[in-house]
Length: 265
Image (cartoon, rainbow, N blue to C red; front, side, top):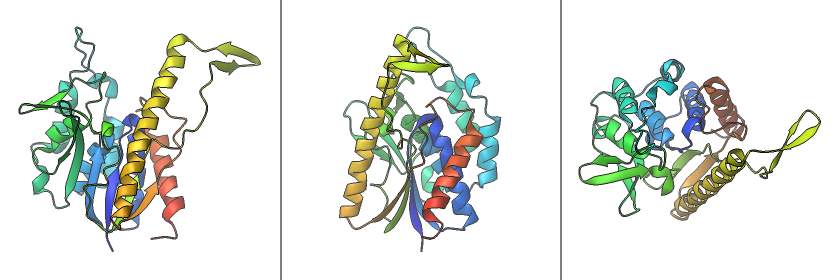
């Protein structure tokens, strides 16, 4: 029995997908097809290329993320050229339709607000479209169409999958802690800074939106008769920018799927 695999967006938290992949490869679980959104699109593409867990780990370990930031001083947005060059080192000019395992990459059409599912074309272009988070990256243009992050319309790309059995790995769940405007330091309670407090509100709001569209797509898949197994590690102690905590993130991802599926596969 094979599975369709869906990997969510979640910026640095998406590194936990590599722990998920490690478990699947250890158990020699057959993969029929793969979808990925945002950070999940990068890991999904590696998996569709039959890349081994160790190769993925070494890629993450050796990338200097801070060096991939190229900001346009006029707009304050990441241009993305350095990210694209890094992706080309990994995927070259490979096309989605040439892969052995069917791959679907989710992005959002900026003009129409509609979901775009890439199942053909250059892998690098599809990933760049999928990861273009608004207010961080400038929109990525393919032809005459500008794309932004796929998480806005489908953070957990279950809908393109045709498999009866689906393993869906979401990295944006598990954070149900209330937002407080104070923090503890030694035995004192201090007010959080204006920016820190408002960042937490924005972060929480984004998570609510992402979780809502994930829930919707899971419900639709179940109504169509799919058996969806949702795996969601608690990554509440990590931030979206914690790219250098890859060891801890991968460990969390591995432990989460192992505890959920050890006796079910």
